[in-house]
Every structure is written in C-alpha cells, then in structure tokens.
Length: 387
Ligand SMILES: Cc1cc2nc3c(=O)[nH]c(=O)nc-3n(C[C@H](O)[C@H](O)[C@H](O)COP(=O)(O)O)c2cc1C
Image (cartoon, rainbow, N blue to C red; front, side):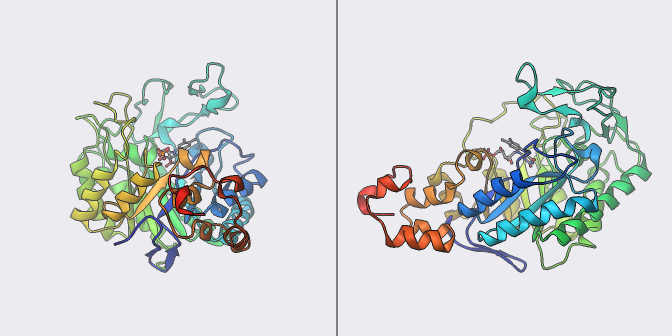
C-alpha cells in the first residue's frame, strides 16, 4: 500500500514522494520571464521536499496571461529563466514541471494585491496594461470580468494549438520533465468544454465531442513534440457546479477520449466558468478527491487532486486508500516551503530529514540535540523521539 512518501513513477519519471507543489500564479515577471525571484521561491520548495514542483500557469501567448506581470513561455528568449528554475529544482532533488495555459476570458487583470479595493479587478481593453480577451464565444464571464470578449476564428484556434506545441518544445529545451495543460478554472480550455461559455455552431461547439475537440487537438499538438518518456497531464475543469455548464459525467467521458490522445494523468479541478455555482464547496477538505477517484476507477488513468488537502493526515489517507495518486498543495506550499518535512514529522515518518538535500539531512539526522529547538514545528510525535 503506498503512502504520502512512497515514490511514484509515471513514464520514465520517478518522483521521490506523492507531494506536488501545485501551480500558482505569482505576478512577478517582467516581459513574461522567470528570474531570481522564481529560482529562489521554487528552489526553496524543492529543497523543502516537494517531489514535483510547478511554477505558475505559463502563458503560451502574451494575451494568455492573467496580468502583464505574469510569466510565460511564448518566446525563445524566455527559455533561459525556465532553465535556471529547472536546474535548481533538480539540484534539490525535485522534478520540474510546467503548466501551459491561456487565460481566455479571465485575462487583462491587475495583480490582485495591487488593486485599490484588494479585490480582483479586470482592466478595460483600452487601458495601457489591458487587452481584449478571446474566448470560444463573445460571452463575458460576468462578475468582475465584464468587458467585451472576442470570439476566436477557426484559424486562430489552430494557431493556438501551434502555440501550445511551440511552448512545449521550449519547455523541453529548458529541462522540464513533466508538462500539464491548464484547462480548468474558467480559462480558455475550460471555457471550450462548458456550454455556458461555448455557444459556437461549428466543429468546436455544441455536442460534447465538439466541445472537447479543442482539448484533443491541443493534446495531439503537444504530444507530437513532447517526448513519450515524459508525462503529459491536464488540469481539467471537470464540473461547473451549474446544471447548464460542464457536467462531471461528461468530463469522465471526455477524459477517456483524452487518454486515447496521449494523456498520462488527469488533475481534477473545477470548471469555474461561471460565478453562479450551486453549493460551492470551497471550505470542504479535499472536495475534489471523490471525483478524481471516480475518474481513476472508470477511465483507468492516474489522477491528482488539489483543494484543501494540506492537513498531513488527510493527504496521507487519500494516498493510502488509493483514492488519488498525487496530492497537489497550493496554499500550504506558499505558507510552508518545508511542508513535506513537517508532514513527515506529523506522520511519524522514520526519517523526516531525508526530504531535504543530503548535506543538510546528514546534520539534522546525526546531530540532533533538542528536537523542538532546531526549527521544526511542534509535532504530535515529539515524545516518540522523531526528528
Ligand atoms: C496565489 C495562487 C495562484 C494560483 N494560480 C494557479 C495557476 O496558475 N494555475 C492553477 O492551475 N491553479 C492555480 N491556483 C490554484 C492552486 O493550484 C490550487 O489548485 C488551489 O489553491 C487549491 O489548492 P490548496 O487548497 O492546496 O490551496 C492558484 C492558487 C493560489 C493560492
């Protein structure tokens, strides 16, 4: 039976444990590039024991960003920053992963920590930092995303698929070993699947088969350049929590098709294609796990889930019960770069410091002293002499 600290192998890639740093947009890029900020922030999480380390959603075109401060991989001169990030993650024992994305209707924003009200804010297309968002149909998301959006032509859709492939080629050059497509959270891919956002009458709209075509063609384009030995995964907006939107049952069917098109693992998340959701579960622990497990059983594909899995006992349980294969941590990774070490201590792992780089680990395991004084949070197992 696996536990949270069991290695996980997918294709030719082996992770040292089941703990993933989930992608998180950082609003800290100039011209879409990664720099010292990202090397430090992501290197620290790899040093803290995360097995797989994602940066943020990397835009495949400049208009695919959330804000003009967001990162991307649409140009060859961005490869160098990504290569530095990959190198530090590998040196710290992690596997570097990239999430490719396009924000679609949810672009042209101000960084949320820079708005006057502290709430998220979209900029109008004529603002110097704004642009006209594109989408399957000319239907704004609503709420704060209120400016007109433009419907993509078929030629533009084909160009976006080429942009995914070009970005994947750059990701490979940079040294990434795991590639995820971000087709959740109301961004472009998610909105193609959702009848709330997609009103098209052509081959990309209408039936489930047509609404999933954007996904399958994107997978084909990326798989053609991304080596078979490296995992290709997708974060899928699998449920809009709205009867008129993406329905989970349909997503299960679509993931089956995606598997035929080279998908190696499904990372289940919400659609977030509409502000109108029935009983949004945002305070519930692990609310995506049950859906992910259904995909695991019915489609026969490895799965990952995020959302409120930062309590070590919960994260460990969903792996032990073989509900999911990987646990993705967002906010817990932001607040504690050494979450895996802390979790190991909480779960009475025999060697919590085996998670950190070997040289520090040697000192921490062999020169113990007074355990609570060496920087670990207090643990329930402290009296068992762990750590
Ligand atoms: C600051 C921040 C930025 C995020 N940016 C992304 C992103 O770029 N791509 C993505 O798929 N999810 C993004 N998310 C969602 C997280 O990856 C994660 O799925 C979510 O926070 C739920 O996991 P948690 O409960 O462990 O935080 C972001 C979350 C936060 C807090």
